[in-house]
Image 1 (cartoon, rainbow, N blue to C red):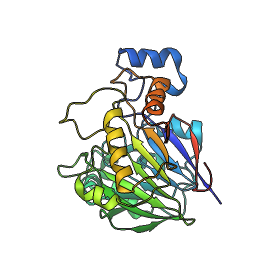
Image 2 (image 1 turned 180 degrees about the horizontal axis):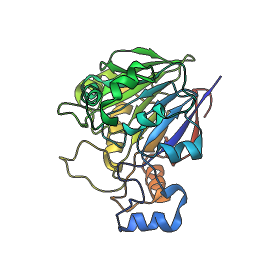
Image 3 (image 1 turned 90 degrees about the vertical axis):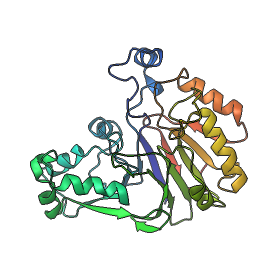
Length: 297
């Protein structure tokens, strides 16, 4: 059986249009709507896995499907557009509580954020630990480059080049392998990978790659290496191609796109198609459903 992936959100921390932004991109999105309106990025994988859970989950669940079946949530990092801890409160307010916990997974440094919240008055008046003890949710720490069985997938977190709320935190991107052998990389808040990660990704032969392209067609200064733009994404694609990480029939989707550039959805899609016509690069949009199978193109 082929799993379906759904982009519940494809925006960056601001969302598009950003509520307090009067820039041309935000005004274009307000006027045209459609694919240019982007909620904060998260992705549903099959019936029971989410990757990230940010501040737009009420609207996302309303539009794209209830989250009642979610059993596992892979958190890339603790910035609140990727992990909004108030979602934990929504789970505890459900009148028909589930009999098993929702499992949340973090990098080791990201897990320290949960340790701070457990006894903090900021988190539900200090009651987070009690809700955890009731079995509403469970928290787990993952080590980079080690493989875990989560749901129906083998999951390996890899180290991104992007921070989080904790001082030494770096984002966790996820390599996921399905039972049929389909292998995908979910890379949000990637930045330009460091050598350790690039070495691990050599010869991974991905069937599917979901990448950030946060700054669209903006030309980033060299020191801005903790997010990608169109140019640095294409630079990473060339590295992945050379290293055997991807092949020409790898399905590639771009997400986590902000308003700080001049390329609405169709223009950004054109940039990618023109730059790499031999690849299947799709600029994702909110609500896009994709097959997670090497046999379906």
